[in-house]
Length: 248
Image 1: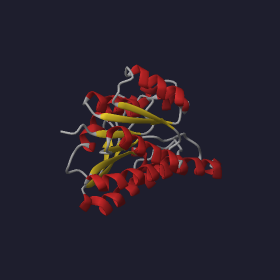
Image 2 (image 1 turned 180 degrees about the vertical axis):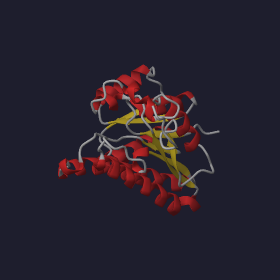
Image 3 (image 1 turned 45 degrees about the horizontal axis):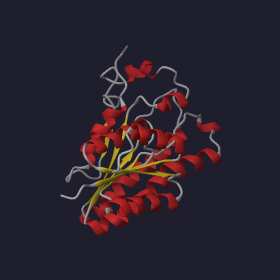
Image 4 (image 1 turned 135 degrees about the vertical axis):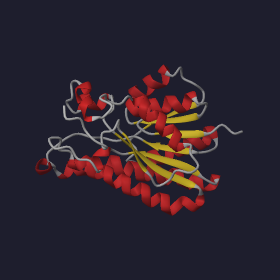
């Protein structure tokens, strides 16, 4: 059996790093991308610089970077079986304070990056006879939190959710499955970037009374990405965040 290949964007830290490690542990070839060269190199070395991992530094909002990721997978491993669109940016900001530059940043990275990476990957998946694309969205698209204004990034992620369903319909007959995982609050460098000093203080937002770990997401990502019969789904992996809340 041919060893399969996955491309993971935003792979150097947090959820992307955990996803990359999960596929690597399962014996896959992995093409890891990040816009931050040093972080990507550090993670590659932490993984012991395996021969079946290749790295591509660059911003996925640039179409040339997306093409390079796919070209790297083809050059070294001969195929693109799975694409994980994890790269993204997110920060709270009140709706009335959002400026054009904010919208441009979120839509450029979160939507265009996902769009063009998927476009490049699906072109090759069609030649292969099938494949799987999995996007990382957010439960906040359909479950807003009062006191946490994040309209601009949430709207960009909402577009990714819509893209998921449309692509699942467009390419389903070609055996290309497209899904989105919508995480709850996950322990990652993101919390520090948006000013949350103690991520565990948010545990009560989840019915399981804890925040998620990157490995919680990676486990489900692997299962969904490798399934032959899941497509067009937005799957909440959120510890019960959307299902309900505790009174105290």
